[in-house]
Length: 108
Image (cartoon, rainbow, N blue to C red; front, side):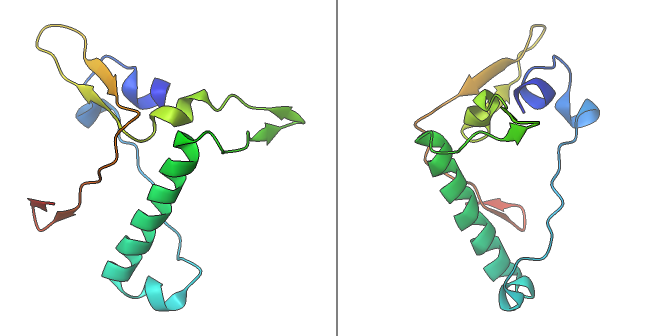
């Protein structure tokens, strides 16, 4: 995440397009209701952010060796602040506790 999205010194809108493909959730009742699905994803994301914040996520193992999990800490509470005629600033706030919900071009 850090190297793919935060580090490059180029326009992310034109040159980078991170996305996630969401599979159907395990609960068929939630999968058919957009609001319930969004609430479920928000709850799961906040749980993941909490696990990362408290450093309780076990390291991924690849060929018997643990992988570096350092970049996960900037997955939540981080962003690029664009600058005119200079490199973007990467900001990370480990105390961040907010989320933004966008609905019909309104931010909540």
